[in-house]
Amino acid sequence: MKQANIDREAGYRLLGELAGPETIEATLSRLDAVAPGFPDWIVTALFGGTYQREGLALRDRQIANLAALAALGGVEPQLDDHVRNSLRIGIEPREIVEVMVHLAPYIGVPKALAGLRVVTGALGKDALATDESGKNESGKNATA
Image 1 (cartoon, rainbow, N blue to C red):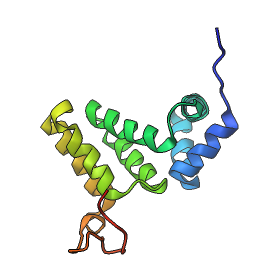
Image 2 (cartoon, one colour; image 1 turned 60 degrees about the horizontal axis):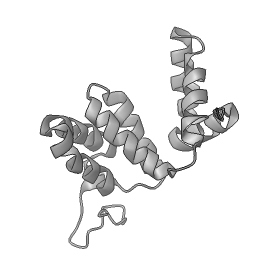
Image 3 (cartoon, rainbow, N blue to C red; image 1 turned 90 degrees about the horizontal axis):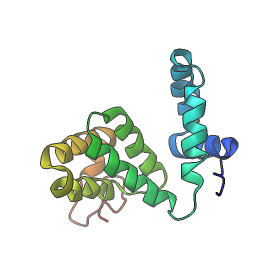
């Protein structure tokens, strides 16, 4: 049997890239105060293990996360985090919206709408506003 490749340092580096250093400091320390060691397990197992596997690009993993969290429902804080993480790695706002729209026939309209509420909250309405050229107010192309 092949052993799993777990790399704690790579996990923390990747989490820093995805969520930013402030998340490591604030969120993980608060969680560690409640459940000592649990945040380290999450970072090590997920970001230092699962995310380090070959076969999917980081972008694809984030899209899968968005879909899975929307399908689960009731995990809005985590979905919000992954929307923000997706933006940090270059997934466009309109692509994130389109993931939620695409999910509707598979997970149900109520869950897709709940996902869209989280997305619009994370993005802010200005990020989704476009002019006739398809660019948002920051000048970025808002369409996929």
